[in-house]
Image 1 (cartoon, rainbow, N blue to C red):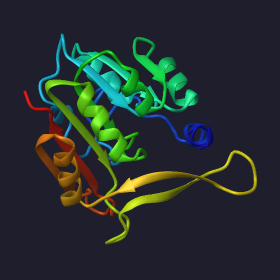
Image 2 (spheres, rainbow, N blue to C red; image 1 turned 30 degrees about the horizontal axis):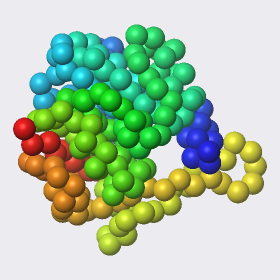
Image 3 (cartoon, rainbow, N blue to C red; image 1 turned 45 degrees about the vertical axis):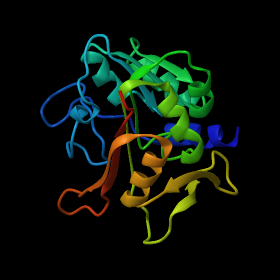
Length: 221
């Protein structure tokens, strides 16, 4: 698949998460691209033993590893085999599947208490396809949460092209992403059947320009 090649190359070029954060912790949850900034795992609600959690686009597994330390039954999926191997190599106790988010959710017999994505599949999958699948996979009262960049330019919303580095000289690779303003995300989430929806932009730390769009919504009980 064309997207797989792009994401494999991205994974090879991207440095892994540092060993510890500013507090000296070896696992932690970060919604933004800025280290030690913004809210943490509390966004997902009560996480602990008996909680079934799924990450869409888990990358090298840093956030998922922290969820697992809380006692949750945590699993992740990623389109890139390179990313999945990196996650398994660093966190061998994690369950990571190489899969497309839509196909995995459509075939999954499991119900999850939490589904989340951090700059992952939620950003790079058509929400008209993904949102109903997430909702159907959530247990009653379950939560869906995701983060991504806000739209790059005002009014530049909907499917956009993200240029990715090619593994060989020549034409770059591209993947699609879906950009919407917070109000648009709230509307789309509610239309898909989510309740208690909130979408907001987390301001960047001083001296940085990129904020983070964070969206949460629940399945009715």
